Image 1 (cartoon, rainbow, N blue to C red):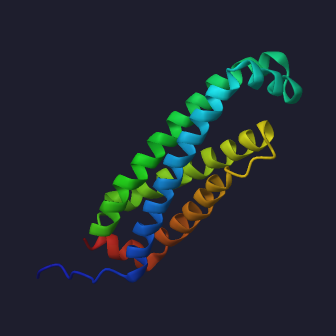
Image 2 (image 1 turned 60 degrees about the horizontal axis):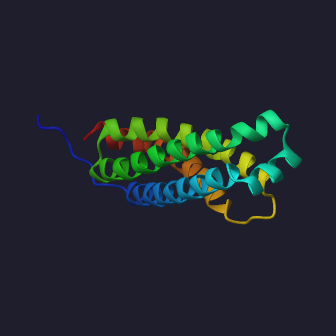
Length: 154
C-alpha cells in the first residue's frame, strides 16, 4: 500500500517564514556585533569598556564580539537554508531546525546581555530579542505531535 501523503499545514509555511525572519535578524545581529567588535578595539571603545568591565575583560571584548558575530552569521545562514527544508517537509530539516533554534536562543540571549551591558543606551539590539521570540515559536510548533507526524510522513 503506498504511503499516505499529508497536505502541508499552514503552520509549516508560517514556521518556514519565521525561520527566514530569524535568519535575517541573525544576519543583522552579525553585522551589529561586527561593528561593536570594531568599536570595542578602538581607543574610545576601550575607554568605555573599562568603565563597565575590568581592564582585562575590556581588552578581550572585541574578540568575544567577533566570535559572537561569526556564530550569528552561521546561525543566520543555517536558518535560511533550513527554511527551505521545512517548506518541503523534510524530517531531517525539522530535527535540525529544532537544534539550531535551541542554539540560537542561547546565543541570542548571551549576545543581548553582552551588547546591552556594553552600550545600554543603544536600541539596535532589539533584533536579538526578536530572534529569541521567533525561535521559541519554532521550537514549540515543530514539537507538536501533529507536525511531527506530518514531517515523518514525508
